[in-house]
Length: 251
Image 1: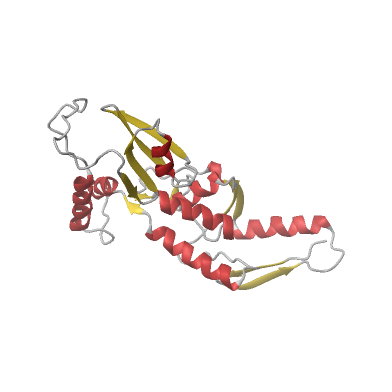
Image 2: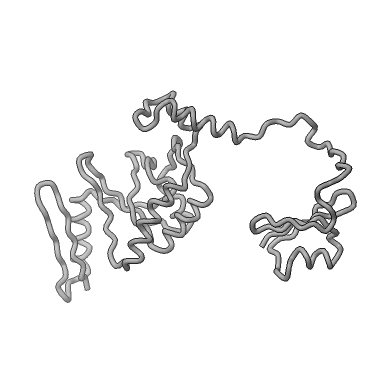
């Protein structure tokens, strides 16, 4: 029984097609879908058919990628992506990557004109879900980062103004250079002599966020109990040096 009303709005007016009468034959549903897809220039494909943008200057952080997946799991896909005539993703690379990671393959492609906006309508959401979806859509974008090196390359190959001025790109490049570790002055395999009066003594316990690092003997049950503090560790790695083992664990 086909009980769905399908509508489409064009620049010349509104067209509505309805097949909500009880007892409508299944074949009529198929005909409606074929006709509407032809009129709206809709094609069906799969996400795996798309190509990632090799000039994408936006990088997903671990946090933004995780939140994007959570948003898709909670609310489902809720926004459009942009592709070109060769199925290259111009906008939405992170969304496609997250969706593929969740096993989402369905893709509906609509050929759009430059003088129209494509709206994605989602129905059946509670008010909490609507608020959560809107926040997730903006927050995941905020947590992504710019690829300074790619932007620099794009600025040399293309005109990226007014989106980025030369000073903007240079500032991003300087941030990257500041984060890059400088090469040391000693052999990385050379072990320095311990200080005469070390700050850390056997039995010391360091709390580093969710991590606990202890200078102690990994074979000592007393040291292990002090480190674990009654909890179970997800990982425990003894690091041996100078006859002692620093126990490092995470919860």
